[in-house]
Length: 277
Image (cartoon, rainbow, N blue to C red; front, top):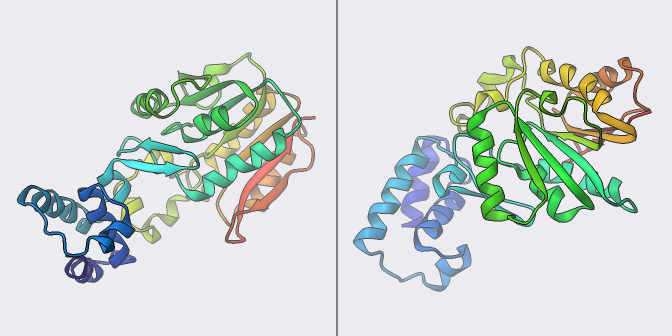
């Protein structure tokens, strides 16, 4: 089944076709990938085979594996994901780590996660960091519902509250120690170059931000300056070619210290950090 599936998916443009075959089959059987090879001669029941064929049909249409399985791992959390929300990426785990590194030696902090989507950033910070309170905002009601569901399922005790609205409008007048966001930062002109798994399935409002991809960031930065306490941290995920431009947007406000552009694990510019003056 794995060999046949890999041969079926590869000509349809699916990257790492054998890995996809293993993950699809492991999901159907409720096994880890290693267990597939420990039980290599296990036959599939008619019910398992029917479910496997349905999952394979969806994957051949380039639907992301995470949507097919309904879950995505993010740091210590297992989150439910579907087309309401962006699939959490390893790069965004790095954004959380940048914030956690900054919080060392600090206590009883308050943070706001702007554009929370699945709730990944907010829930990770609330469960791993010294945060007494995390507010998660999103302009999409469906996304906020998904985040609330993940709160209940993955981290029910985490001190997170959810608010509907555009960027920082839901917390206007409040002050925070951290403003963190993985905002939309893909340029409209980049759409054709994206994999179908991203372009055709994930929510456009979580991806695209006008020509150059900076429309949302340009609106977010001055709002963050209003929302942060003196010495507070602004932390954002950005596109690999946007570091200098985003640093410039931050400097234009004259409200922050020198911005720092940090790389992801692949060495590409991925995070921008700056403290409120």
